[in-house]
Image 1 (tube, rainbow, N blue to C red):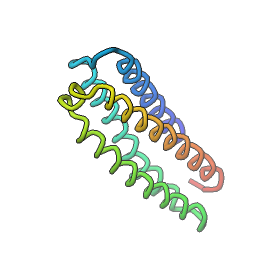
Image 2: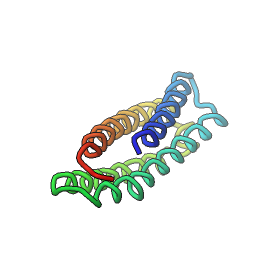
Image 3: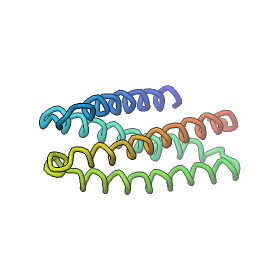
Image 4: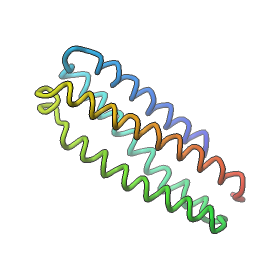
Length: 135
């Protein structure tokens, strides 16, 4: 499980790096930026699905109270994260990005930090709980 999670995290970091690189340009690339955003969104959705449908249920099978509480908190944080992410994506369309490139770059940087914090939290939490669960 950790190997698969690490692979998702690696792919997300690569996607974030690509969008960061694109955000250093003076203007948005109307072809590459939408592709990079879509690819990052897709891998993020896949990672969320993996954690919610594979990791959490498997860890809950043998979890003690504290582990179960932490896993459910992780799922709640995913829901909150998904809401913020969905709002970001729906607000920052190709048109709004082109109209306010600087605003998009500021908003994107906030999302990047949130994504990085989420990955750190889930890696830490899942690693800790795998040590205490019999799979």
